[in-house]
Image 1: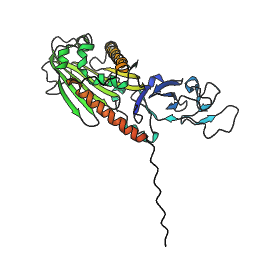
Image 2: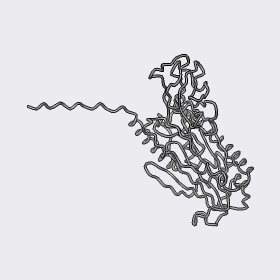
Image 3: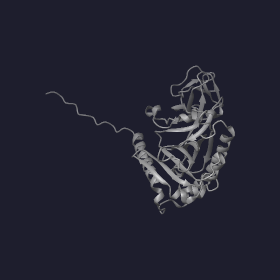
Image 4: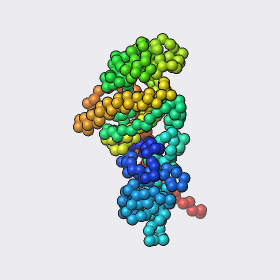
Length: 360
């Protein structure tokens, strides 16, 4: 089941240039292109209204997107505006258009009822636009697992010491014993994990040269249904990171994690590791991207392995442990969203006719 009435990341804005760009989201084949005149992003179903050829095989022209089969052109609204050798265009010559917005280097698309597509509900992430303070690279993986497994992975960090021991993880026991400041509502989940007086992981030492123990934090916010915002870092132990909010002068990174469902068993993962410690050093930003990408490949292997086993065995006999508390809460948020989305997609019940009263 997909939550259709939601904003999803369809692509990095830099991915969409002069040519049509195809991507399947929530099992729906879409094509994205930029209007030749305005540069605005358009999103259409990837199917010509004439003979169902993929519009993504066509070319962008001034009037819209020209099908590569017979030259039929659709504009940004999906309406057919040109048929070679024919002046009259049938009223039903059109394809579905999807609301699409370019913001913070992402292309966002709304898969549900276009009348409900409120742009103000798109996450604000200004750090992607601040290249001076938060230099970063754009990452992308195609993952053969349900998107929720990746959200689970990101919001339960007790796996770090086991899956990422040689990179960003560190000592497993340090993660298990982390102090947790958790904030929950029916529609949100965020937390800060504190690992005080801990040994810094190899990635942190390589980045800023810590000589001793550190006070380390991992701040995560779940932005339903499929995005996670991260701010992680460390400073020398005992310098007031938790008590006084002093997080300056050490290691600091931000990452936007965007998961977009492709099918029930696959998803797209967009991520942007931002360097908040040596911003004037492009090498530091490059190295951070390499370390983070290596760690995320480790997550990818685990989640793809989970997906295969779940397809084979199901999950009815799986058990929950103490560290699953946040995961269980976010699953409840997603389940509530699925139920509300199903309600919104139901056709309106026919109104009962009120008998006409005839005056005597």
